[in-house]
View 1 (tube, helix red, strand yellow):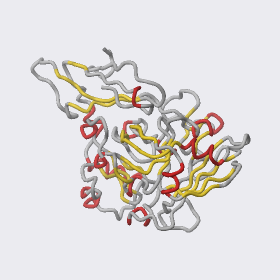
View 2 (spheres, one colour):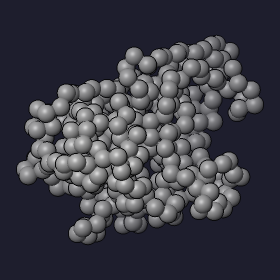
View 3 (cartoon, rainbow, N blue to C red):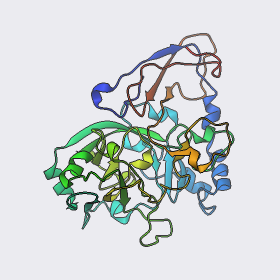
View 4 (cartoon, one colour):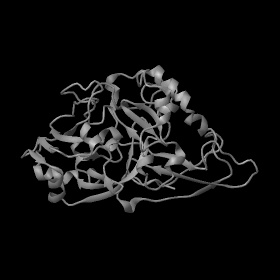
Length: 353
């Protein structure tokens, strides 16, 4: 069935399919925990001091997930865990670049506030109650997916977290539309981009530094579905998911949906914060051969995510040996628009139905 896409609820659709065989090769793509630990150590994703026991123990509340690292916390679901229409908190992936702020761990607001400044007529500051009282509430089921989801299957191998298929989730969020907040501040004609700043800390807790500070063009910021969220699945945002407030830019890579927000700056140029420059979150403008070196000028910032799909049932590795039909379940989603059709292959992509 189609996964709820990052559009309003009325645009969602679902499609069951029957096939005689299940593509057992997905088992190879998913791999085993020990393989991932070895790969992580070799690629330097987390320090070698992180023990195998720490990986296998899991993160409190998310013990079902495959934990890739704990500092920063990165964990994903296996395909079978993503069978729900709305992804439960316990099965929703986590992608962090720095340390979870103390405020989020404690679940206390204290002196927290959100600042809106830059290319606006009036700089504004809101506490959470002011956001709730000033603007109309907005609620939607939205897909968030890491831009590197599926990286473990790349050949040649590339650096970064070796996500298999589970760095994606569809939760129900409640908050306000970002466009309402920006228009309240008065967006100037010079505005071309926004950049977010969060309270997350660099791994060495360096003062004044941000582990990530990305953004989107002003057109995306003013989109109907871009929102500031304080609830996930009917509860305050969990610490791992950005308490007390996060940005959600559905249909774009998860790195644009900043967590632990404290400031949104409207820019008169493309935002140049941490992980907005160099090769970070960029792809070739045109198709290239695997492993090819691409000149900087031929790279572009990832924007709309491509169409993706997963099979969630039967569990990866199962197969039909007696010729009986096998009923499959799964999800498909798109960064923009509605998924019209899902094709299936049971011969490694040689033919599709």
